Length: 165
Image (cartoon, rainbow, N blue to C red):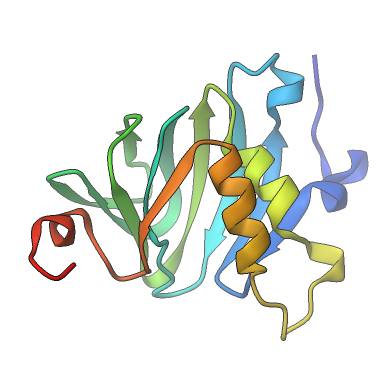
């Protein structure tokens, strides 16, 4: 069993990716023998991920508050509080938070996303208002974990089929 409360080490599990994403690792792959991980993620208003795909794990999103628009393959969905969505492996996708930002639980199976955060993000206690994503480190870790970045934030899967993209 494991117990996670602020008193049991929440600060050691909190990270930021630049100024756009704040993540708390609730359960890591090491704690589940690699079966899954769970993170609690907060995206600022209008924050967007690059277009990417995961080759080693599925991504499941459960929106706690706010909204997320998800472009996954040929699907586009807007998720609101209480909505759940699964992004299968090898599906190009991008995610953007809505006008009030978003908070979501992210479940990866098998585990993968929490390791990316732990290795490539900045621990929250070291972050400042000027903290930026270390893109070189992020790309190295993401590639090692089998993730593929296909385009910058704002690009969606349909853009892959357009000439000049």
